[in-house]
Image (tube, rainbow, N blue to C red; front, side, top):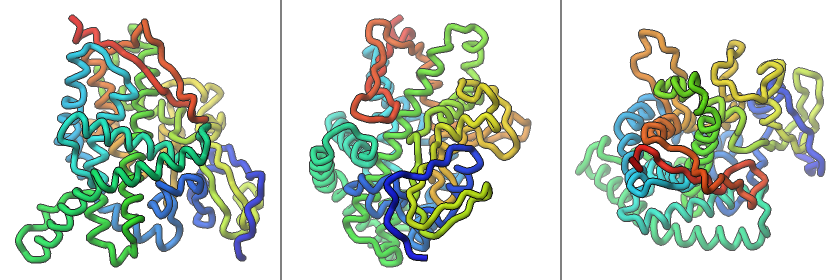
Length: 407
């Protein structure tokens, strides 16, 4: 059946089971980012059907467990040390800025942007990623849409000239060297930009799509991961005066459970939107006509009492879950649009069993661990402040001091 005009009032799904089914349905197409086309048009997360399958297959090669483990062992510790050094020396920082700066270096490597060589360029790239994030989440912005669109367009032009073009030229030269036999396969960068350039003909992507895809990866990692970092730190700080809780914070497995429980309660987006491309009947009997806009209420699904119990809205990293239910609920999505970098952010669940020799804790867990090792505490003179430019429940500022660094 052909798609009809979208209805003005969405069909809302809010139970864990209904949202899970919808996320896995191939007859529901991504619709949340239509307003963010300046960044998101043609990006992986917006594609559907065969086009999505082909792009995902190419990019999936970069996101394998062995790669995440390699990054966690070789890239993440040095990145954390580099990002934390100046704020430790100062004795204070803002977690929103620290999270974005730390993650930005990692997401730049994943996206295919050569890391900034000095603080000024790092500040510039971080600011561009912030603008891209605002553009991608335009549907939840409280700003004037025309003003936001103009800001994003200008940022894209700056990004192209100052960061993407030189990174692209270096990778194109390396691909030419590979074709001529002057370098080996392992000498190529393992990043999204290289994958797109190498498979450009197969994927049928143009320069604009390449630019937006790289910008999407840059902002998606820095935005959602930095927000998870700040929310996770907040949950820990709220309970750190409890001796029983504080005594467990040296255990990175426990910290990882705290991070994943935080993610369940604070999904990067509180809702997902889909458009039905065919008539659908859910297992519960609900009929969804083709063309309908469907809202997946992730917050409600992630606290569904049939799954999480009557205290599902409370933070409990020791919560026991039914078989097959991940601790983050639906916050990493599901089906074809499951987060491609979920193990980089959240790691791999660790059982603590004797044969669990190579845990992957995830970037956020390691960042929180480094905070605590340096005695980070909320700044009593400067309380956290929520972001008034977005309907999403994120912090605009979260000042902290480092007690160990000040001693």
